Length: 214
Image (tube, rainbow, N blue to C red; front, side, top):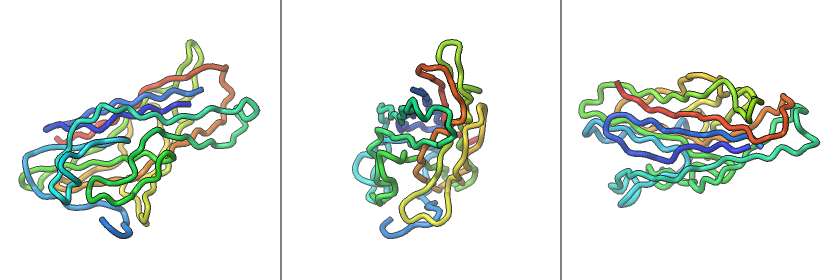
């Protein structure tokens, strides 16, 4: 199974980050949400690998586009297909450190960085991070419900989650809200429930991450 997530992008108003699913600062932190400096209305969202130029945020760095598309993959052993044993997925994301200050928040390849910030001149407003998935992953005429895939949120040193764990619902779901002039981040560990017995094949779907600020 592969989960292909979008790379980090940088926009001034809103951000839509596509993802594809294919089957086959220093020191400890707690609910890591930090305050950022007010400024021009903008959003930043990073799923997996991203780019900051000129250093981390706390050193004056600035976000930049990153075209990388990361893959989270799993091959289900034939003897285990549909036996109900949840199987961990592995990513090709190399992002371990937060661009806030370089803190080693995630542990690739098992984890994928998910985070971002919202900024306004006055601090007014709240951004919403959502994800949209189709009802199922498909391989030709065969399908697997998208809710077979879930994630566990965590981060080194975290004691409370800034972005909660969850399961794809095959539709639209809200992951978290981000108050203006704050940055939230966590690390997602994906897993496949493995409670169905599909036909052999490569099953694909698409998940779209969106960070929006009305």
